[in-house]
Length: 51
Image (cartoon, rainbow, N blue to C red):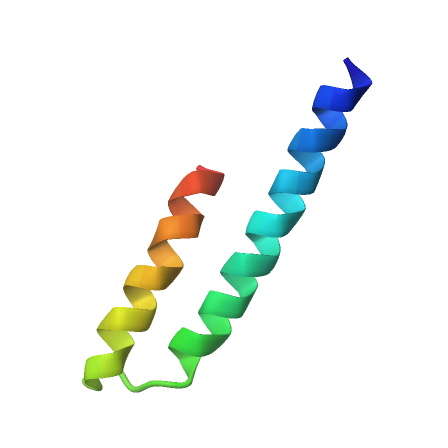
């Protein structure tokens, strides 16, 4: 059972790191910038996995 818990914790850590990196990319762009929508979509995908 500990192995499953460890795997879940590792997956959570990876997703949190990915969300943080994506958020940083989103913040580089203005809302009206075309690239903002692209980066925001990339942020939402891993975020939805956390939920």
